[in-house]
Picture 1 (cartoon, rainbow, N blue to C red):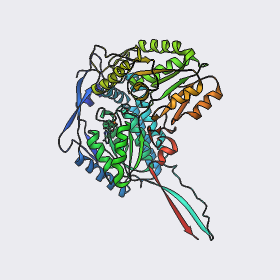
Picture 2: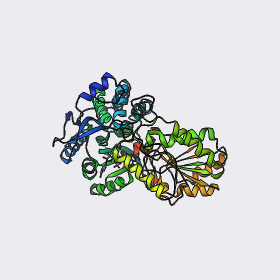
Picture 3: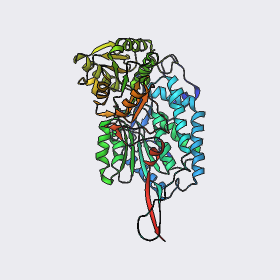
Picture 4: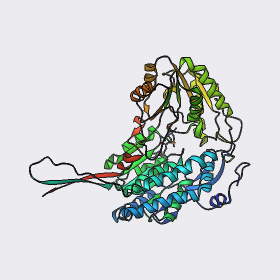
Length: 495
Ligand code: NAD
C-alpha cells in the first residue's frame, strides 16, 4: 500500500487489509445499499480503504437496536462496578493497540504521528478511565418540601435514553471517546456517527468496546455522510439527545431537525479564539505557545488560538518570533516522525483555507509568512501569519480551521477586551501577563467558555468545555458533562 516513503507496522498493514464496516447490534456490516466512501490519505492523496456510506435505513436499524437495548436495560441494568470495569478495560485495550490506532489516525487524518501517539490515543484512553469512575458516583439530592405536613423528597438521575453522538474529523478517536465516556457512564445506549473524512479509528474503537465487554446493541456505529446519517439521527423521534461537535452551520441545522421530539442537544461548535498579549508578558513563553496554538493539528482545532491580539509595544517582537517558529515547522507525511505540520484533512478543507487567505490579501491584510499551497503531493497549506488585521476584516471574524494566524494590535487593555469579544464565537481565550489583577480582570470580562492565563489551551475530561454565544450549547467534561446525559426525576412521598 502506498504510504509515501514511510513504513507502517504489520498490525496496521493487516488492519488496512480487513474491511472497515459499521457496527449495528452484534453485526459488523456494509451499508444496506452497498454504497461506500473512499478513505483518502491526505498526505499522499491515495485511497487506503473504504467505509460504508450508510443511509436512513441503516440509521433506523441502529436506533431500533439501541432503543431495545435501552428498554431492556442491557447496559443501565448492570451493576455500576461492572460497567466501571468494562470501561476501564476499554482504556487498557486502547493502550495495548496504541501503535495501530496512532498510525491509522495519522493515515486517515494527516496529523503527525508524534501527535497521534502523544495526544490523540492517550487522550482517548484517559477519557474512558476518567468516565469509568463516574458509573458508581451518580447521585441525586434530598430537597426540602415547603408544605404543611410531613414529606420526604428526593431527586434521582436516570439515563436520558438513546443518544446520538456526532463527531468531526479533527480529533476522531479522542472526540469519540470524549462523548462515549459520559454517555456510557450515565447508562445511555448509543448511535455514534464518525465524520466521513476520518472514520477508521472509530471503527477500531467499536471492536475494542465489544472486546472489553460492552454488550451488543449498546453502542452502534453508523458511518456515512452528515446530511444523510447525521440528519437522520437528528430528526429521529426515538433519539432522546444528540451530542454534536462540528460547525456552527450544522449545529443550527440540528436545532431545526431536533424539534420533532424536543431532543436535548449539546453543541460544541466553532471558535475564533483570541490570545491577548499584555505589555508585561513573558515572550519566551508567549511565542512558542502562540505558534503551537495555531499550527498544531494544522490549525484544525475548534479552540485554535487563531486571533493574536498583541500590545503595540510588542508587535514586532512577537510577530518575528511566531514567524520564526512557523518557518521551523517540517511539512510532510504525518507518518514520518520528523514531520511537525501535516496536511489538512481534505482537498476541500485546503481550498477553504486558501479562500480565507486570499480574501485577507484582497482586503489589504499582509501575509508575512506562508499563504501558499506548497508544490508537493498532499493537501498542505504553509503555516501562515497575517498582520494588519482589523476587527472588520473577514479573517478577524471567520473561523478558518487551518494554520492561519490573524494578528491585530491594541493600545489599551479595555480595547483588547472589546476586540476579544467582537466575535460571534466564544469558545476559548488565552491571556498573557505577569500582573495577576489584570489577568483576572480580563478573564472575567471575556465572553468565552474556557480562559487560560499564561498558558495555551488546556482541555481534559474533568474540565467543563463548551462555548458562549455561537460556539455552542452546554458543556462537556466533569459533572456538567455527565448531567447532559441524565434526566432528573423528583420523587416526593407524603409520610
Ligand atoms: P461539520 O459540522 O460539517 O461536520 C461535523 C460532523 O457533523 C460530521 O460527522 C458530519 O458528517 C456531520 N454532519 C454534517 N452535516 C450534518 C447534518 N446536516 N446533520 C447532522 N450531522 C451532520 O464540520 P466539518 O465539515 O467536519 O468541519 C467544517 C467546520 O466545522 C470547520 O471548518 C470548523 O468550523 C468546524 N469544526 C468545529 C469543530 C469543533 O471541535 N468545534 C470540529 C470540527 C469542525
